[in-house]
Image (tube, rainbow, N blue to C red):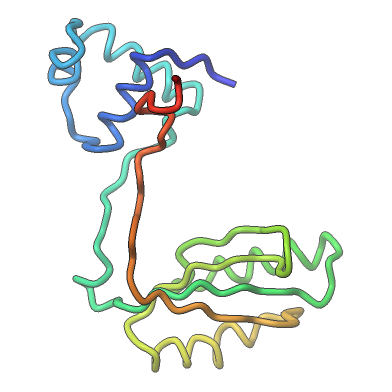
Length: 160
């Protein structure tokens, strides 16, 4: 586990909020020079704390307004079946996220499509073609309350 101090946490919070924020701007906010900021960020990248930078895209603006969480239960649970399911499901472009979970199901999928017709087509022609699925239960997002919240421990709210 990487050692992260309060300055590192603040840098992570800045980068999470705006990955284009310059080292100079972060240094100014923290009362430091740009060189140690650059060195800290490079260290966190090397240690795998920072794994990449990406744009956050609004799927609604691209006509993808239906988000569905789908619980998947498999018939067989041998390692080969679990691995094959993961390979098969991640080849489906509609699947944005896939988690292996505990509880009543084996996997939780986040699926983003344009509408119910596209979801129906996805279920009938893509998901149903994956072998070993025993059950699938869909949960349709009616309203997104929170998305990509900054991790609370980066803001020091939990350090009290």
